Each structure stands twice: as C-alpha cells, then as structure tokens.
Image (tube, rainbow, N blue to C red; front, side, top):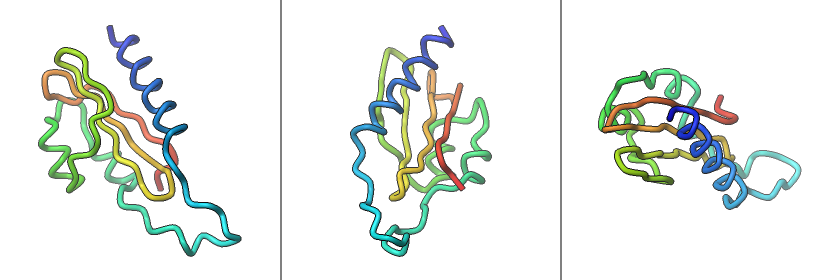
Length: 102
C-alpha cells in the first residue's frame, strides 16, 4: 500500500512539475520572488502530525493534488518552482517529499 501511495505521490509531482509555469530566465534571478517555503519548514513536518498542524506551520493550506479514499496529497510550490508535498492518511502525515528547497 505504501508503495502505491509513493508511486501516486511521485506521479503527481512529475505531472505538476510539467504543468507548472516557471519564470523565464532573463540573465539574472532578480525577477524571481523569494521562496515562501524552506527546507527548514519541510524538515519540521513530522510523521503523524495532522494536516491542520502542517497548515499552521506553513501558514498556507497548500493545494490538494490527489485524493483517494482517506488519503490526500497536498503540494506547496515556491515561485522558483521548488516545492514540497505531503501525503496524509486519515488526516495524519505518512510521507513527504521535496524538490529544490533551500
């Protein structure tokens, strides 16, 4: 079951990555706004914590990108495309992933 959830999570991340528009490189990164979500915030998300606790920690409900039965996958994306996602089963964090967070 966990392998199926992980496959779903990474499939959603891949799809979202392809569908997300990124800033066009103009020779400098001055036009890219600063990151809203950090690696530190990602690291603070702990297995077993509730979705509402995660929302409180990140000050943002994120985007629901997948739902199946009692399992929900949420994603938080920075303007530069870096992101984190979290899978909640029965409202509790069971896995998380990140790409490019600083």
